[in-house]
Image (cartoon, rainbow, N blue to C red; front, side):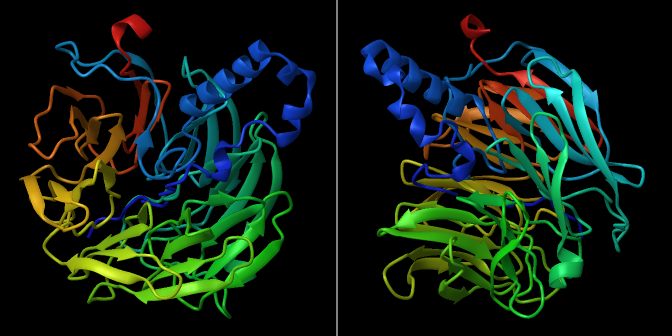
Length: 444
């Protein structure tokens, strides 16, 4: 069995707290007294949002890049490499915010949060702490969860259970909490995996703690406990959030349920049972929200289910175990079609990339033997990064999978999800972090 990165963490309405850049009071300044000032403000906000990938699965936590259109054909030797860096162990993906690419990795006996200049790769600040995490199966000893950047802070959750908040500009430690000591978080098969989700003043985590602390919310400024909920063990998924029918939901795929909670109070909206048939399993795909629908998927004979969220219990639209059973990589959605990985990726020949009709579960096409790729949506294009380090770009269409560009950008093994910011594609393998330029030539 392989170990997996957190496919930790889909917001459908664009209200993700990590993308809040300007405080509300800015609108009361003299700047908005002129049409030119207002236009500059709105243009700056749009540019800043498009330029950042501040958390797992991007600014809207659904694997979607909403920046400028990318080049769909590449030179023979692949898209230009902007920079690359040798890095330590881990399955934590990079994030990009405020001109910095930030990576959480392990070097020796230390967990390291490292900042790089997003344009040049020049190393900036770093923060480190001693970690005692050891993988029981002899796999990678590094962190699994991807950092979140919000309101000038960087939040990380280590495989050993340490939660840290750092100053995004300097790397200075602001606070830390041991989920093991404070909540009784268990190690599970592969350590702690949940990528933090920031909602308002809360840092949301699935820690799988004792005494009703399966899910916790920490104050992002102090680290103090705001609330706790659920007695479920932690899975390997990360939360997503959305407003549906005027109600805010934070969705957690725990070991046994899809659990919806109020992110501000911790009140449980519902628990929908959905889990693999065996305990020795890894369910890491994130609940994907599309309007009032939530798509949840796992392997090991659990399969996929599409739920419609109403005022009471969720209503099942369809389900099945041979349609789009995600083991770890989260699907993306475009124009009523899901694109994602069907089947176990820890057994040869790996999973199949599929296109499935969202409302019916009908399989439109399937591309076999791609190993264990991740899928990112950029406009009308799919960016598919395989575990062997090959990047492909192809139209997101139910007509079939027809790549227009392929390039070997990383060595084997790749498990972490990438970041796409301002047309730059940032991804890591087991020992390398690389940034390639996917922009059209005129935009470089």
